[in-house]
Amino acid sequence: MKGFVMGSDQRVVRCARVSFGKDEQVNRERDIKLISYLLRHRHASPFEHVIIAMEGSKDLWLRIVGDLPSPAVQVYYSGNYLWLNLRNYINARELFPEELENLVSQHLPATMSLFMGKEPEGYSTDDTYLKEKLETSSGWVGLVDSLELGTDMDYYTFVVECPLFVARQWHRHRFGSYNEISRRYVDYEPDFYAPTYLRKQAQSNKQASLEEAVGEPWNSLFLKKINWYVQDLKELYKAMMEKGVARELARGILPQFMKTRFYWTVPRVSLDNFITLRTHEGAQKEIREFALAIESLVGYRGSDKKLRL
Ligand SMILES: Cc1cc2nc3c(=O)[nH]c(=O)nc-3n(C[C@H](O)[C@H](O)[C@H](O)COP(=O)(O)OP(=O)(O)OC[C@H]3O[C@@H](n4cnc5c(N)ncnc54)[C@H](O)[C@@H]3O)c2cc1C
Image (cartoon, rainbow, N blue to C red; front, side, top):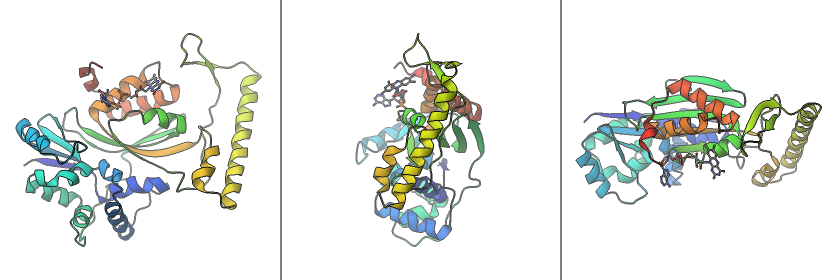
């Protein structure tokens, strides 16, 4: 059996710890405790960032799909490989050959031991935190990992830091997995995107903007006011933290310019769809810059063109 795994025990932990904005902080002992906690409490989404590809026939895939314990378990087929993430694997492990279990356990010794109720002997880590990182005017995107076998289901994991309104647009791309900072957990001073100038509303297209600043003195005046309001809201937020207001409510005053951070694990077909839709001139400039950055990191293959709708 030929198989591949993208990810590690540490990757699961990073994707879980991003909720606290602490994905860069890793420590073997605490990480193993966290994986155990995630498994016990069924905090399952961090396990979606580990990807498994197993070589096999379409018949094998159909047999497995026919026996899945629930329609919520997804196993895909592309380019002679069965593709699934670790969450799906854990939910349907019995349907796969033992060799795959050995492979997954080799790559994720702590997670798989804990899942089997055993004391972990090993713990796997990532080679690097980020392979490459590109800045945009409103944030940055980093390539964490990829599993490229020349199929439409090749997988990629990115870390993105961007304003809330960009994240809202991004998360509409449902075919993929996300884990994001939660302002229910963190209370540090947020970072804000500050545009260098205020683009004009386009008249021809309701949702578009022009690469042209609104006239003066309004451009400078509004930028100054935005900065003033953001500073004021930051102070109000800080005061609320000091007086014990719940983080989950206090965050309500933080505006859409606030930056967030998330992990995104996405198959090639969905990534190409994202690049097509978000590099288009109809997409907002800020997300367009991210889509172009991603295209320059991992390229565009046109796999989305096979879709009619
Ligand atoms: C310029 C622009 C303007 C937009 N404006 C709005 C707006 O005003 N309001 C708004 O709500 N959204 C808006 N969107 C978001 C848009 O409707 C999509 O939700 C988003 O672009 C994600 O695209 P997608 O569904 O193809 O991607 P994904 O959700 O990643 O899906 C990838 C592919 O998987 C398949 N797929 C996934 N889920 C399903 C499903 N449930 N059923 C069938 N097939 C599925 C489809 O083939 C799809 O192409 C806008 C997007 C753009 C680019």
